[in-house]
Image 1 (cartoon, rainbow, N blue to C red):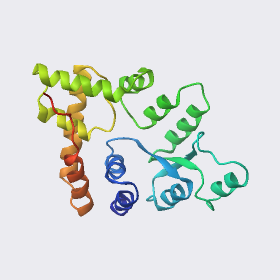
Image 2 (image 1 turned 30 degrees about the vertical axis):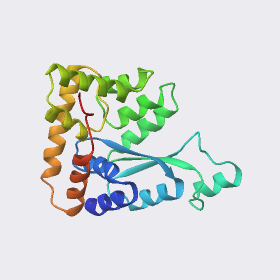
Image 3 (image 1 turned 60 degrees about the vertical axis):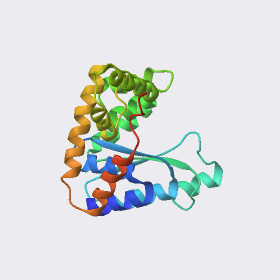
Length: 210
């Protein structure tokens, strides 16, 4: 059933979403998130999820429909309303997610912990005012230029599901995680896994260093 669901996610949302579910399925992360999903499609994800997986749908505060449109969206009778879909195998994580959203904690911290990202990466993403991904990318380029990171090592970051803190130590830890994720994916049989692997490999990262 997981393979069928992976194929469904690949078709509906693309290779990145399918890859995140693959990591969840293999126990390499405890939760995943699909963002900017019309409510009608979010309900389809919920209905299609394999047995043993918990889903939680949260209507976006910024695109929340009003009046009758909101009622219809909640009933799944309208595509109006943009949602986020959270998927996990552990229902306690759903309870923690709901509790976190109702607390004073920032949403990025709540979501980061649900997804099982390293604590320093969660804090980094929550506290950096400019683009955390851009800062990390610049640090990767710097490490390559200095000879402290090979381009082959940096390419393993394509297989990492979070933005590592912009430090040499944390980036190298993320490289090891990326290697593990890639090796696990390469061991799978099936066309959908081959497609995911190929599409990740084709992603141009890191940027060229001149």
